[in-house]
Length: 143
Image (tube, rainbow, N blue to C red; front, top):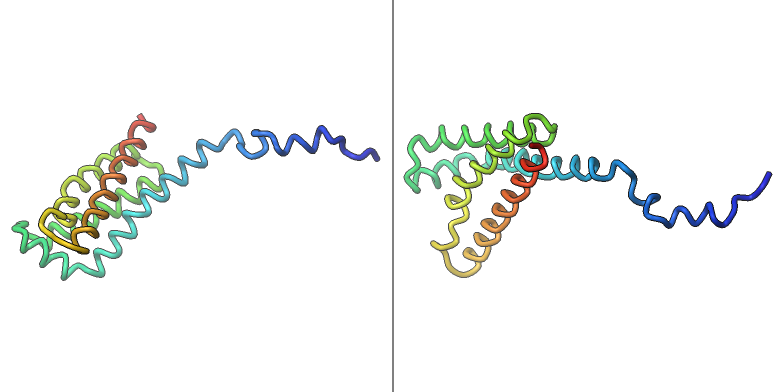
């Protein structure tokens, strides 16, 4: 039996060996898992902190704060699962962008805080803006 030529072995160092043809779809799948999964995890955390969050929302003047919180939790978890599964992606992403538009200034209101608390809220605000950008990208890809 003949040993493989040096030329054949060098193929593994070419782009095709490391970047399969389905890499874009793999990256899209992983991106959907990460973006949608973030909202599923956030929904689970919000369930654990429901009493605190309800009080915070009521203090901010949200009518029916408990109902609004639970509606938001259900919305973010269902839309997150849909994004992860790639089902009705554009609609689910649009719902989550609207969710972020409402929730971000409510929970990451850095302009009302000082010191380390302000810095933490700025980080949350910027993170939510970035998530919104990711969802807009998924919407564009799915149209």
